Length: 319
Image (cartoon, rainbow, N blue to C red; front, top):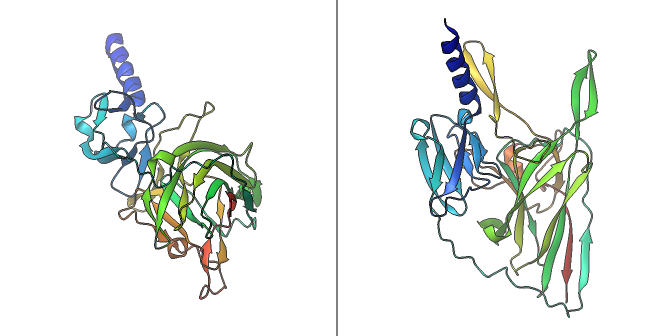
């Protein structure tokens, strides 16, 4: 084997390991962040802030989607350097766009998030998991949501020196915040004008994290706020686009095991929880009550209560 051949082989190996595909707007050719890439097998990933996704992560066939763009079903073999998406030309609704007058004398209603600290009674997040919770208008004509606080647990067991120990876990994740209209006390339509992303990490978030919402007007039917886990980020807060599962050999087959993310989200029993959950990449990504995902608390009856997340919030209103 000659040196020239070895050099070409090495270059090809490096290229194949680092090839990046950029997802762009077909009209302006600008990169699109946070595009959903559905592997069509229960898993998926998102493009990073520059619209990039690792070519080697992509399966043979996948669905590309974004709130503001038309869905596309693509074959990996047909992709070269970029994927172009066509805009939906959305018309933004005005239902939540009311701004409060600065002259209004406002009252404030606050609630502190509660955290039981028990990691066995939690949601274990993975890429694509999204949960939402209801925010009530409480009959106020002019009420505005300023912030919500999500309780978290940042500890779990691991084996060290032959013993099982409860230890803190380091995390640094990108999450997406979405606001949904409410219909029959269930999340209905996503309002993309209020969507944004946020990095949360264990250095700054120990028992909870806060989401500032810039005083969103709460309609009479209430609204839902959601948190979606998009994956880990690097030291520069850039999304790491990697396979969302590990491959384990089990007897004569290879099984895919989801990579869980931190932190954990504590669950409690509560009346009329109105907390819902879905996996974006599942075959049916419909919202379901959290209780229906079998996050059951052992040896306790759920006949009269449902499972939910005991969030905190701050609401201002003028009547």
